[in-house]
Image (cartoon, rainbow, N blue to C red; front, side):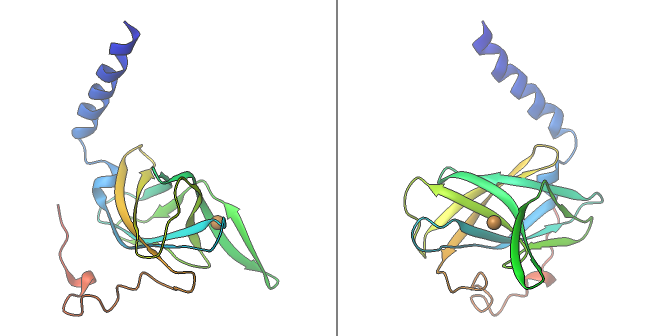
Length: 166
Ligand SMILES: [Cu+2]
């Protein structure tokens, strides 16, 4: 019975993983947003990742039920020319953070199954080096947006000052 073996194996892996906090358990995602471009142009997804663990955590990529293809990219500028390259991983340092932002690291979203409009929320499942995942809601923003647009949404709260232990 081949079909029964896989769920058992997965259950075993999950139990084994429960003995130690996995990568995803140490990551807090904030300011998650997508810049939606017109037509069939790929969209960029941006997020701030904070690692409260003692070990660095590698973001390897993401998956989504909305986009057929998601790739981890890095934009750079060389001699006045903007380039984009695929990268294997983005390191989030221990007790540090990494930012995916325009003109830098981003998740490139391609081939949506249905049109994504500004105001929509899209869940991307971030994937880390140890195979753990973190489902994160990204808000879709228009093509001229430069950030998540939430900086003034909660003026009473200083996110960085809030404790976020587990
Ligand atoms: Cu890209």
